[in-house]
Length: 224
Image: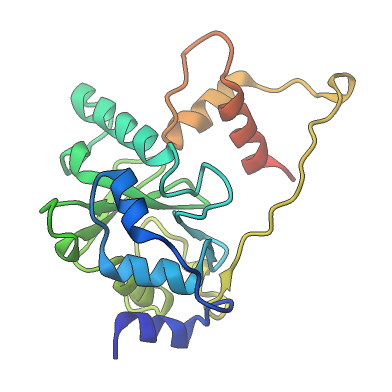
């Protein structure tokens, strides 16, 4: 039984497989992608596992979950800065880490892209959003999902409640969001926004105006 077959048994996909031009995607990224990920992304499409694990996808509905969007580059830049300055431990060379997912708590899932030309040998790494711990899984992304969702392994950074309900996959349901009028806008703690942004891999200036994209991401994440 393949890992994808095992995954579809414990977590049924939402519908028909999607069609993705992988040659175009890989050319745009400038690197090959693991075959298991391509099959996984084709079969499930964009979405979230157990309302917690968000996989980056070429058809991600926002830049924050789009594999070809700016997030992988932003996250790598932050890791490189942490690595060079010794701010937080990074157990792998940042240039070998490519973000392929995120969690509701702010952790990121990475491919360890070593060797670069052989994606079938890439492993998975998970950081801790607000701490120094890392977890490494010696296998593919699909095998990792099977192991987590079936309870075979527990990632220390993940809450045990992730398995409180049967495994499920939820496609995105984009909604039109309109900001409140300025007269209704409540004051916010910009220090809290900066702290949140750094924990989630954004390069935010220590003072001055917070970039609109970061402010919008914070508002989405903290909307009641």
